[in-house]
Image (spheres, one colour):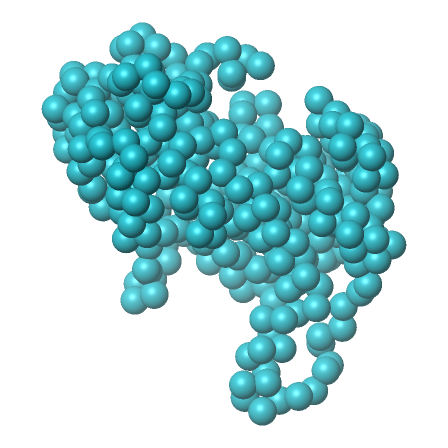
Length: 335
């Protein structure tokens, strides 16, 4: 299959070329994001490989179909950026990477918690300047604290294991409770009870129309005073303006984000020499109790290798009928 790979970074090219030794596809790498303006680059390619911030809406799908694309290969588990109805109407198959390394994202989420709590980032900067004072670095024991985990799929389950290892009590919420999570001592509860009872809340669920702005002003109001909120899933789960108000009032004691609802024009790029135009994001960065990473939760050697192998495996399955095709359909959205 001839595949146009969008949003290519050097590490993408390295991992995909390594995995392609066993598949033999023809890969063309493009640095720009997939948008209505760049979709013409895919003309003549049967496959298009897209990442999380690429646009695969109805306009783009139509242009891809006109150019001969028959398969969209997602280098991600999430598919909220894809218009599946338009894909079906244009006879374009969509495949994803349902799991790559749940450990990568779950460990990153716990890293955000530890850093925010014990203020490693601030301590590191102080020590480098010869300042060894401890004022302002006070944290709390994780042991005995209540952690609310929203979403107990593969990543959420691994995160529950990590939290249990620290001696935390776990409140969980998921429409499909997991026996392994229960065996860790977790108690499944409704969202209101989780928000009200958790010292730390970690989001590990997909973005769908139903989960968009799951954390809004009303949800923040129900949370404990000083709650630590962590989002390593999708930016749209959180209403950023509502969270900023929560930070200003002290309701949210610390915020860790690896995703942001308007990240497409920010993340994965070096903008250090420019002025950030997103005023909401700029406001977030002014808080000393906010830690933002640029969608790097997935970024481990193991995860990159698994993403590349599954992505090209999907291409092989679509073209030759060999192996498993991890297809995404409208039924997945309804489910």
